[in-house]
Length: 226
Image 1: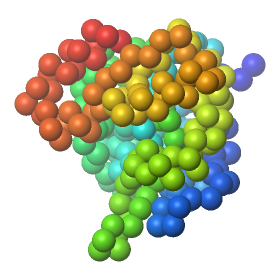
Image 2 (image 1 turned 180 degrees about the vertical axis):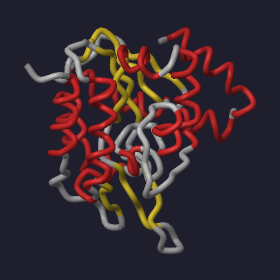
Image 3 (image 1 turned 45 degrees about the vertical axis):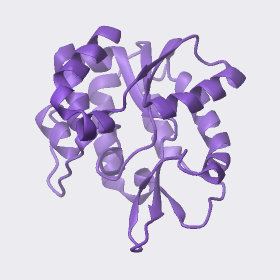
């Protein structure tokens, strides 16, 4: 029987957005763009998910370039991957602010082994999104930043949520990162009825960027509600 890791690894290998997107928006798919990312993420999931356990789902928005966009592991930059998870990289380094907070929560929970034994982190859109700013640079964007973009992404999001649940997810509750993200999941969940309850947290990026002086209070809140 396939393990949780087997299902996640196969999912990542097959990930592809086949629809069209509004002008000026592109999909970031590190699993198609880099064999190294596939190898890194496979090592991570083999280490922490190679079992038949049921886990609860934590859902972000969509991957950023310096977290899952670089490592293939949600909310995990190369620094956390090496120093906390023990998966060593030689060729590149990234630092992602949201990863700092998430790994403070993981530390408070008891470390990556007990945390990942109980929880699986992914995103509403498992692929990242980039848009061109006024200077012509490609920057991160969210699936809900533009109504036309959300309309294009919605079928992909629903398809992938259904797949994630099939990995072995406890659907009694889903933990949602970001209040605006939660509004869209609530609307989708009314239609497809995947989760009995949704628990909403402030997004790690918001906490690090705007509430950093209260970081430990937020860590305590996460732990209490998880």
